[in-house]
Image (cartoon, rainbow, N blue to C red):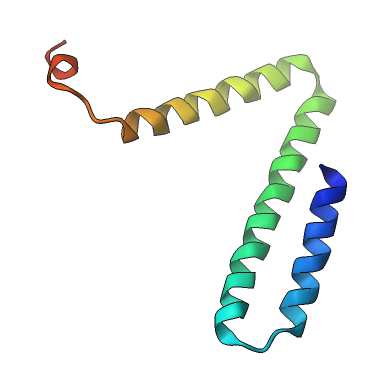
Amino acid sequence: MGVFLVVATVVAEIMFRRTTKEGLRNTLINVRQRIFAWWIMVGVLAVSLALGETVMLVLFMLLSLVALREFMALVPAGEKDAAR
């Protein structure tokens, strides 16, 4: 995963520096922002792995709760669900 992220970062930077079209630059800015977000995710994961199993489990729990909250926000509540 790390090698892929490094290659993606280098390719995105090279493409961004060489392009002159405004639409393509905006797309590449978006790609660079997403790659940066992946770097942050990898960093958080690496730190939690370095701090031990308990920290990793707590991080997994928190991320699972956030995902469940997002899922419940997307799923429409039925009439039977609202009655409970």
